Amino acid sequence: MSDPGRKDFSTKAKEEMTPDSTKSTQEKVKETITDTKDRVARGMQPDDNKGGIQESFDKSQRAHDNSQGGATSTM
Image (cartoon, rainbow, N blue to C red; front, side):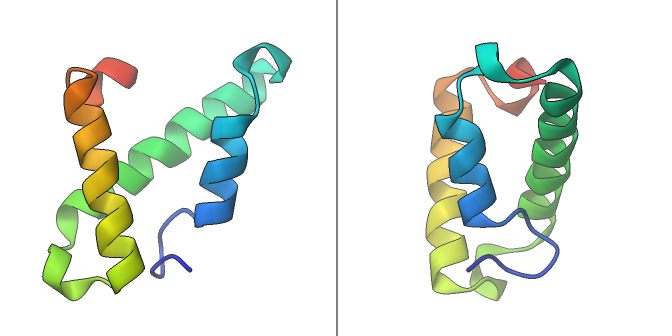
């Protein structure tokens, strides 16, 4: 379960598993916007104020973003 105001884990997983080639432009734009909002929320809330699962998920997402050249490279 995600923290309030955050993108739900099951929604994120579904988006990641669905190939971009099957998504409409509207779906891609929506995902980009909601991913950006989630990244902002992730950065605004300190890890020690998050639930355990949310904290672990955020750390893995930060590591993924950093390995891809930072969050701005995917926007």
